[in-house]
Every structure is written in C-alpha cells, then in structure tokens.
Image (cartoon, rainbow, N blue to C red; front, side, top):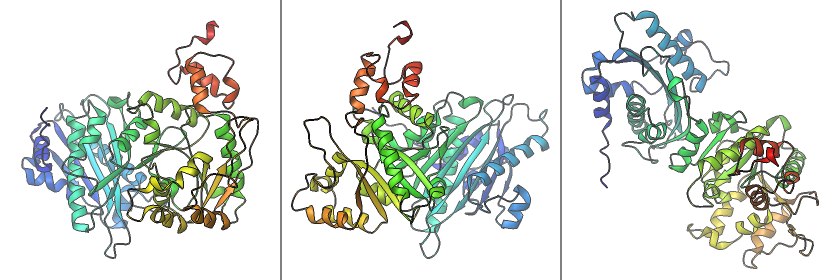
Length: 474
C-alpha cells in the first residue's frame, strides 16, 4: 500500500490560496509573521488574505484585545480574544452581499521562542475560527504547542509549518477530526514540536469528543501526557500543574472501586500532613497509562470513555500518559513544579519499580532512574496488599526486594521517602478485574457494594464496560 503524498507547507498554502472562497485574516504575536509568510510566498495571496497583523508591542496588544486578568500574553484567553475579535471584524467590515460564498476565517497565534540562554522552552497557543458554510456559524480549533528545536530561528520555521498545516487541515481534513489532528505533524516530528492540548468546537464538530482527541495525541506520540478536568474539557498541563503540590494515583480504574477511593483518601491525608504541602495548592491526578489502556490489545476508545466518565462524574481530574515507568512520570511532572509531590501506589507497583529488568533501556540502569527520583521532592505512599485471609499483609516492612537493590530501597525508606498508608480492611479484597468480570456477567447484587456510591447507577444507566445487562427487567 503506497503512502499518501504529503504536501509541503508552501504547497498547502497555495491550495488554500487557489480556493476562491477561503478568505480571512492572520494575526501573529511573539514570533513574527511566520505562518502568513507561507501564504504570501505561495502566490495568489490577495484572494485569501483580508488582513495580516503583528501586535508585537504589549501596549498595542492590550489596546486591541484588552488586558488579560492574569497579565499574560502567551495564554489561551489571549488567543480566544484574538480570533473572536478578528473574526467579528471580518463580519463587520466585509459586505456579505459581495462575499456570498466566502468562507471567513481568523487565524491567530501567540508564541514565545527559546530565549538566548536556553533556560526557557518555546511554546504557545495557535487557533483558527473558520466557516465551512457561509450560512453557518464558525468553528474553532485551538491547540497548545511546545517547541523542541534548540534554536529560535528553527522554532520560528516550525511555527510557520504547523500554522500552515492547521489552516489547510481545517478546510481540507475537517470531515475526519483525527486525521485533521495527525496532519498537523506533516513535514514535522517530535524533535520539532509537541501538541499537548487540542479543542475542536462548533457546528461542524458537534459529534467530536475532545477527550478522544486527547487520547489520539498520546496514542500517536504527538505528546506524552494530556489532562482533562472533571467537566471533560481538555486542559493545557502547565496551566493545571504550575507550582502545584501534585498528588498522583495510578490505576486501571476499570472501574474505579472502593479500594481506589480508600487509597486516595488515605494518601491525601498523609500528603497534607506535610508542612511543605498546602491544601489550597493541591492538584490531584488520576493517571491512566496508555499501556494500561492497551491491556487487551489495541486501545478501546469506548472503554477509555467509560473510565473517564466515571472519574469525571466523581469530580476528579484525569491524566493519560505514555509513562509506564514511574521515574519518567516524576521527571515530567517536575518540569512544572518544584513543590513537594506525591505518588500513591500499590505493593505490586513498588516491587516493579525496584526490578532491574524494568530499566534495561537505560545506560545507567536502575541507578539512572532513581537518580531522577532522588533529586526531586517526592513522597511515595504505599497502600498494602492482602488478597485473602490466608496471605500475610504486605507493606513497606516486608515486601520482596532483591538483595542487590535493597540498599537503594533502604535509602528511600530511611529518609522518609516511602511511607505506609492507613487502610480499610473491609475493602482490601476488592479488585477492579473482579468487579469488571461481575459487571460483564450481569451478576446484579454481587458488585455494587464494591464501587463508590453512585458509580453502580452510572454503570447500569449507561451500560458501561461492555455490559449488555437489562437490569430494569431483573
């Protein structure tokens, strides 16, 4: 099977310019006129561009778009104000009678590139408000990008390419939102850029679930982690995690059970005992790894949404990541905060953390991985394991660690980095896989008490986790 031909950025710009109906504005702040340059250079730009502007000076920018409450310029609210203001000006200033078939658009970005000292990573917001039918309301597509090129000039070139990809994709790939998203990486790679947040809204995207687009970002390796809030809205990780005391609990949550909630409550109580942790600064994350979502082969999107629906209904923030190894998760989170963080994990996860085979891909092996953990301000909260009355309770005092690795474990334990959690003995026997099996086999009355209050009703009402049971007729 031959691969589809990927157009260059200039070829995409020319295809847009040659369409007689596409007409709008380009507004770029921070990194110059990098996107519109492709459209001017491609030719026939006069039929596409109504206006282009760079409100580079902050006072000019504030005068045009208003001052942001947070005082920032590279932020989502600034981008929203830009595309809404400029799109409204198109409708106000252009006579619709003369533009009956025109598909208006307003493209904008607000970007910052790497500084001279290389101490700040380039990143920014990019979006477009556009029509697919002159008689319909406009749609919005907004993304947040992180620029990985080491040079500011290279980052500017990357901005020009991805911005051109975005404009082209919205008009020529809108029927397939996932393909639209994937095409943003045409002529680019993760060495150049990362997309860690996407939102698609509007009349032509009514059926789009932005959580699935978040999943696509991780699944297609466009980024390593995405976050969405309890209302199901995709969030930019830095906005959620900046300078926060982050407490993370990892699991399958298929479904969430009373054990998960007991782990959470006990872990939060322990975490908040720290003088370096402030309750008002706490950010809780329920993390699901991509490998966990692939437990039965390919990622099952319906199964993913089932888990997300329940966690969000309980008021929790959900994170999807590619970080199977905990040290990578710690490294990722620590780029947003230097405040104390916490991990709530089970005994089996802790044992796996101290398995040398787990780190064969690292030149420095387990020492390299734990070097990252040692240098971060992080606590590990261990929930015990006792599957039956005949098995001894396992906790930090008696878990099986290989003698060769035991000194590393002892160092963490003696320095208070690993702490045992209090637990409810009445729920220790509950396992998600058991609950899931009972749900699928329609064993009503045998699993409802194993999940948090209200969860059983949600599962039954929405037939989650592949359940086809007719509970009302029972």
